[in-house]
Length: 225
Image (tube, rainbow, N blue to C red; front, side, top):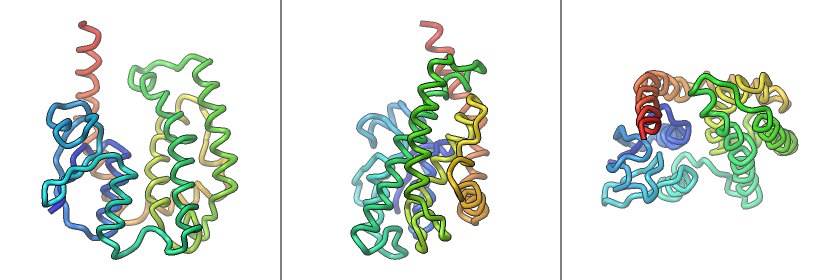
């Protein structure tokens, strides 16, 4: 059985977990937080998520894991058979990561510390998010799924990216970023109502108090140095 290493409060962890559940692949979860010595034994840089296959093969990085799962377990495919359509799915995922998720992550330290990000940081984040909004408006179809008629990895990936955009971007910037992409809020709401998404979100919320205690302990340790 596959072992999924990481913690449920992580959106990257939940991308892989969602894919595993959608494909019906048996797996077990191993609670590990980023940077732990145990995680370093299965992830080269100690990042979440990582998986261990039944034969002992370890793999990290969410998009790499998802591609590996698709190739290893082709049942219930999450990528189109057409090469151009498959590339479009990956393009949506990459743009969501670079222009939605990563800039929003710059605001995490301020959210966790209960402070407001400096205006210069907010403006930089706004500019990058703005580029993402333009690109996503051009690429996303929402007919009914993000890349067209087929449910794909992009639906899973962007839905969990949006948890970061909503939690950190919107609160710090007072900006409903998803509303800027025509059809995205309605699609995101529909995604959140699927059985798998509800299950993943419930696990994420249950893990959040312990995760926040972990973050608090890290901050205290850093301040003590």
